[in-house]
Image 1 (cartoon, helix red, strand yellow):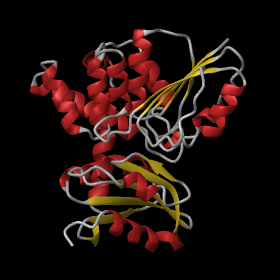
Image 2 (cartoon, one colour; image 1 turned 90 degrees about the vertical axis):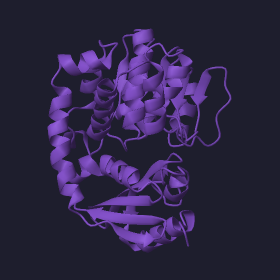
Image 3 (cartoon, one colour; image 1 turned 120 degrees about the vertical axis):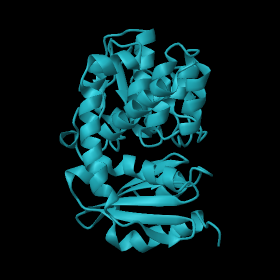
Image 4 (tube, helix red, strand yellow; image 1 turned 135 degrees about the horizontal axis):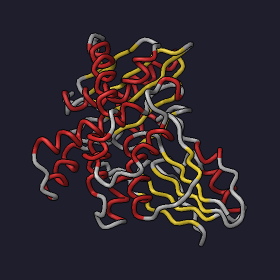
Length: 320
């Protein structure tokens, strides 16, 4: 019998798993990857009696692998906030899925555990650009302003670390990062006991400075786009920069793209003022998926760029 933990390598996936394992320590096989590496369950060769916990990974993307695992006799628990499609019904399958745009997987786990490790949930919410829920929870637990900003910085940097074409683009692999985090019940102790946040802050500042020099162009009154070059820094900063633009222009949707051979990798953000529609735009394309407020397209052929703009314009009409 084996235990598997399958998790998105971003702040939300890391902090969701950390809460569960602080509550119930297990010797597990860790399965993770870069932010857009969503078909993670394909890597698990589950057998009868095995137990799999999946966090912050789309059920819809992993449906075939999930069905195989259940047919093989494994038991699966799934925590997520992405569009799931049809949720399987099986005595061996337990789902904790909530697609409300004001939540994330770590907040779902926080609710499941009754707030036992809430500081890590706050870190994840900041990383997922859920400023209002994160600040609400920070106030509820009595965090002073400097402590709140420290957790915010950590969340943003952990999220930043997950973006890249491969793990080689990242400063820390999601497996290495989780193992470094795993002994800390308090994220403030993690920050003060390691140099990980400091290293990420240096790199994110350099990458954001480059991204901010790229012109953001309007699509329509309610949407805009920018195209970043195909480099390591742009692949790393893609999601954080999209989140920054969303906060700066809360009534505007954004499509931030990284050039790739024959097309683009796309990160989509719905307006923060009305965080819905991002996954609808992404799922209009073959490799798209995500959640209501934030989504992405793994590969958009150049020939489909104009169609993306049409879908963005129709989904986010703005003031027209």
